[in-house]
Image 1 (cartoon, rainbow, N blue to C red):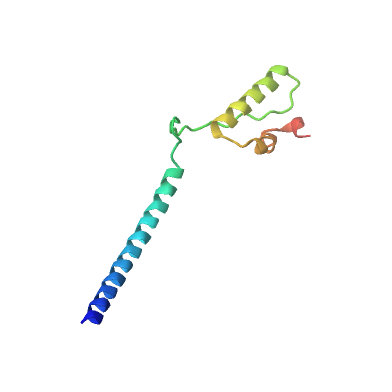
Image 2 (cartoon, helix red, strand yellow):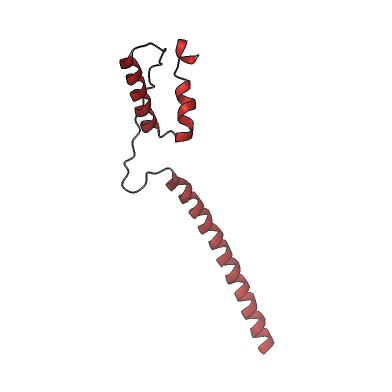
Length: 103
């Protein structure tokens, strides 16, 4: 009789344990999904914007200080708007050079 009760309790515990494992797996799946969704959201204090950023005009190497200043300013604004990492700025800027400026 005591042995029978112990076996019933063990079976009930196994069933409860299995249900708990399944619930844990479901919760972990939901947490992973929420993390993926939240990673695309702006951080606290930031505003989510979807602005189409115009590409800067290329610089052709003209010996005009105003043209050069405008090009550099356009590139800075472009980098701020698109959040380009510092280490990629020179590479991307070189893509907007044309004519004598590429030499």
